[in-house]
Length: 209
Image 1 (cartoon, rainbow, N blue to C red):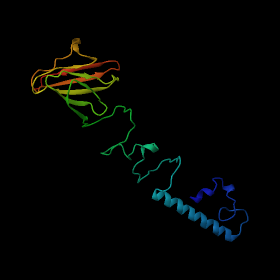
Image 2 (image 1 turned 180 degrees about the vertical axis):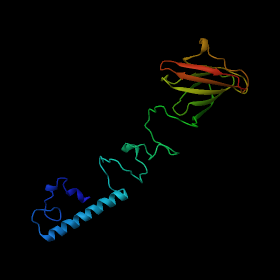
Image 3 (image 1 turned 135 degrees about the horizontal axis):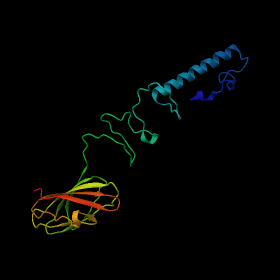
Image 4 (image 1 turned 90 degrees about the vertical axis):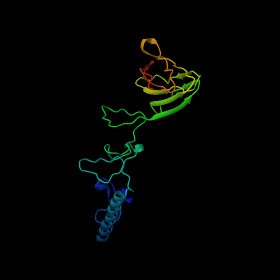
């Protein structure tokens, strides 16, 4: 926008009309300069109204701004204009939330399906996981990195026939003994895991048949 040709220092706006107001300019020059200023004010106002004017490091003191829909994350915003209601708030990959109140949340369920002789847990896509054992095929489950504060739950279903077992690498259970997977057709064991940064710890609720 051409209004930038004007200086923020009044005395420096002394270029020839209509770009300035030099001392002793003719009356016709006054008219030209005023008309140019009117056009620049209108141009600036229209740009702000239509969203085509980019403000660099604006400073707004007091008052209320209306009509803002959102500020993109790339521009330092959250992606939304409000942090309440049913909108989606875009956060960084590892945000820190202090004493948040979350009502009615739902964890993402990862359906692993039927496992064979081995399976490695991946909990980045969900912390409730379900798996079913294959008959006559003991399964060794490998744990993810024991990052402090990480936790997840496994719903493990026994095979419908030819019952089998499962082991979990590097997990510490009560008394130092891992639970024996319920040897009843299609029985369900719920095993919870939590990490402290060094080890995984597990506990089980079993025989939910």
